[in-house]
Structure formats: C-alpha cells, structure tokens
Amino acid sequence: MAAKSGLKSTPRYKSETWKTKERASLAERKKANSGKLCSVSGCTKKRYDLYPYCWTHSRRYRRYGHPVIKLPTQGELRAIESAIKAWLDNDHLTTKADREAFKRNWSAGQQTIRNHPSFALPFSRLQGHSGYTQKSKGLVILSHYFHRQGHSLSDAMLRYMAVRLWTEFKWRMPEGSRKGFQKERHLFMNTWSGTFVLTNSGFARTTTEDRVIAWERPWYVSENPRDNLPKPITKSVTTKKALDRWSVATTIRAIGDELRGAVEHAMGTDWVSRDHRLLQKASEALGLPHSNPSIHQHFEQY
Ligand SMILES: [Zn+2]
Image 1: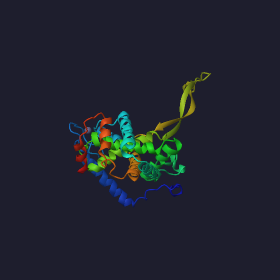
Image 2 (image 1 turned 90 degrees about the horizontal axis):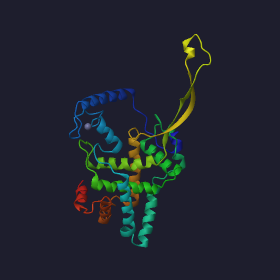
Image 3 (image 1 turned 120 degrees about the horizontal axis):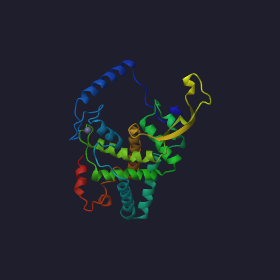
Image 4 (image 1 turned 90 degrees about the vertical axis):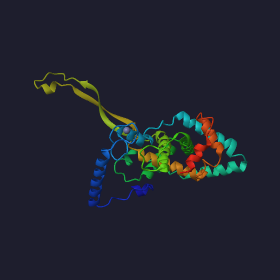
C-alpha cells in the first residue's frame, strides 16, 4: 500500500523482547520524571509523562511549540507577510534579472513540496498503524491543502518566513528544555507554519454514528413494562471533525519542516541575515519601530 502511492513507511519493529525491555525502561523513566516539579518557574505541579512540564504546560508545549510564550496572532503574521512582500518589491528585487532569478528559485522551492494529487489520501488511510512516516503524513496533508483545497504552496512558504521572522523578535528559549536552542526554535516555527497548512487543508476525520432524532411510544400497553418503554428513532449522521493539534503534533511539525526546506531551497539558509532591511521591516510590522539590531546578533551566536 505504502509503496504503491510512493509514500514512505517506517521500518517494522524489532523483536518482542526488545519491545518489552523498551516498555519497562520507559515506564521507569516516566515514574522517575513524575516525581519532579514542572520546569516553568512558579508552577508547582508535578511533571507529566516524559515532559519537563506538568500536564497543562506540556499540553501547551506540544500544541503550540512553547509552554508559556505569548503566541503569534494572525494579525502579526499577516503584517510580517506584507513586510516580506514589500521588502521583495522595494529592496531585494530591484532589477529585472533579480526578479527573474527569484521567480525561478521560488518555484523550484515549491516543486520540493509539490506532490502528485494521488498523495491526497483520505484520513482513514492514515489512521491507526498506517506505517507511514511523519514526513509522508505531512506530504498527504500538504497535498490536500494544494490539490483539494486549491491553496497556494507559495502562501504556505511565506507563512513559514513570517513565523521565522516573528521568532527573531518575540520567541525565547523555553525553560527546562533539554533540546538546545536551535532545535527548540525549529520546533516552534515548524509547529506554527505546519498548523497554517493543516487548518487550511480541509483534512478532517469523518465519523458516522447513529443519532437519536425522536422517540416512538408503543401504541399498546403491555403487561411487560419493558415493552412500554419508548423506542428510539435513529438517523445515521456523518460529522467532520478537525484533527486535534495534540494528537497530530508530530505530523504538523513534519509539514513545517517541509516548508522550511522549500524556503531554504528558494532563498538559501541565510535569508534572514543577508539584508538588514528585511528585519527592519518585520520589526516595524510588529509595531517595534526602534529595531534593535543587537537582537539579531544575539541569535547569530547560536
Ligand atoms: Zn506547569
């Protein structure tokens, strides 16, 4: 199944003894962790699972990429997107040759995340032990976004750039992290740009259930009290439910990582620092008129 669609599957598991051992050590680590306090300063709750945070903070961390930060708003991200476009038009692409080169690179970037329409599998194919890697699941959702909903991959890449610039000014390292600066920042950026694609992908879980729409009273009175009970009249109802950001967090990040790759394919890896006017415009878009270039230098040290 996986091979047919061109989507990659995870390798099958190791031996049963390996699995049993792994489970035992996991349970032990969870137990040791749950005795400690949440890493967020001021929080007095015990840790959850293997997270360095309590239930509330680990939930926020998994869903939003950070346990406590004030999250980026739609307005902020849209303002930065306009700033990026203004920078491209007014500062970055000044000659005809520049514009043509940019067009070529940008569409080459899009090609890296553009898959055949057959990648837009329904939710049921990804459910349970589908065996697909997170990257493959991410490509499925990207394909829904592009092929089914007709959204532009260019917009998704632009969103990634906006999130990237937002972190330059408003993100900070989460307390208690064991991952390191770059990894945490990537996790945050991938979460926010991946969520943009997921929410616009129309990709949802459909469930069909029998719902009671009315009750039928028996027309006769029986001596058996059970026969006198009203009987439900049911109708089969199909509902579409958006995917939960907690349960698909890893897939969301895989989508974000695809967008990062596409942007870097188009712009190179140093696009944020190459021209200070971009940061200047992004800072103005966030209402921080006196941009402090030292913020940027601070990031460069890592
Ligand atoms: Zn906490």
